[in-house]
Amino acid sequence: MRKVWQVVIMGCHPTSMLGTKLILEEAGNLIVLGTYSDWEEGAVMVREEQPELVLLDYCMPDDMIETILPGMKKEASASHFVVMTDREGRELLLPLLKLGASGIISKGASPSQLLQMIEGLREGFLSMPLDWLEMGIWPISTSEEGDVLLKLTPTERFIMERIVQGITYDKIATEVEVSRRSIDNYLRKIYVKLEVSTRAQAIEKYALYSRQVRHVYA
Image 1 (cartoon, one colour):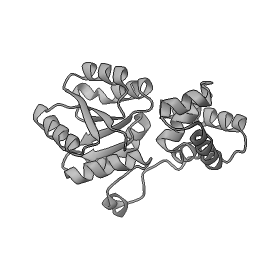
Image 2 (spheres, rainbow, N blue to C red):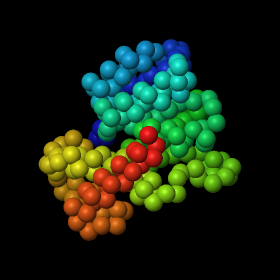
Image 3 (cartoon, rainbow, N blue to C red):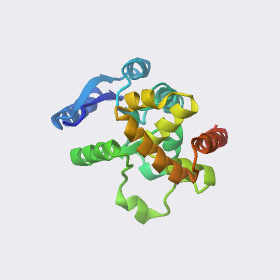
Image 4 (cartoon, helix red, strand yellow):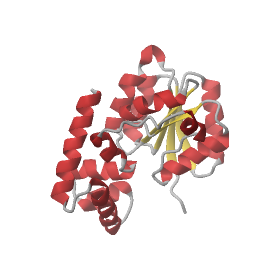
């Protein structure tokens, strides 16, 4: 049986949030913990409950998304944050990824498109409309630092963050809800992506690139 994901929805329009809540809960493996128009209240729920998924409206008052999203991601590093917007998503994708988002979706997306994006996140993939590719070059930075970190899935980045913090593999396995052996499998994939062969090299390279990326985008 697949794990039921907990979801928090943060937006400006109660009716729209209610519609999204009904779509998610009809899927059967998603449960909405709450809908919030008050951003501070929503952020508290995210911090306390650590939901697997947070859907939040890009049109936050006073452009608060630039400040609240990084803070929530720091306090709930394993959570996926998906931004809903009625603006040109392709132009917003890279900036929002830098802030800690796991994806972006149009408010006009169909229920099946929303659920498909969530299904992708479950498997460690970022989904995006094909017409974004037809409109031009993929907007991700081509710098070495950005490329290295973006090769890692959200789960792999979470594992590396915890390893850098000195957390044991057994505890990480509990946090990710996988077996201890699965952590070893994750690490083998991480080593290949980071082009290293030892734990120490992986920590050094990941910590270095993380600091560089944070410095560049600060």
